[in-house]
Amino acid sequence: MSLPWSPRKKLELTPSRYPARLKWLAVMGVVPAILLTQMPWWALVLLLLALPLLVRGWQPPQLSQMELHEQGLTLIGRHWQELEQPRRVLRVGPWMAIQTPKGWLHLFDDQAPRARLQPFYQWLWTNRKSS
Image 1: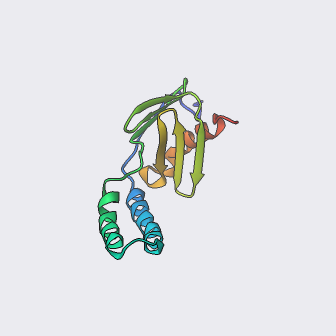
Image 2 (image 1 turned 90 degrees about the vertical axis):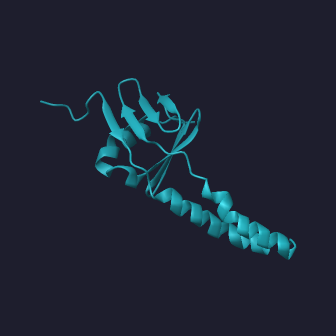
């Protein structure tokens, strides 16, 4: 009889399409605030023209690989991190954010099938730090 949870699970994650959408959503949210400020017209135009350039390089730190094992969870993105207990985990719709000692990491549902992400979601939920 096999157990449903194997001692080691490894998951390669694909790049997500959501950060690009978040980028343009942030721009659309900032434009009305810029237009309502009391700045000279030339400063408004300059800021509005620079806005796409400012957000072009921005991207939230995403995960590229996750590995679940007996000691904890290994997260690989920009940094390699070993978690025994996550600090905070936020889940809203297709997005999940994990607070680690090195900062927040973001995971989106389109990076892997939901069935393959389920053991990681369960581990993060059951081992989260309650404050």
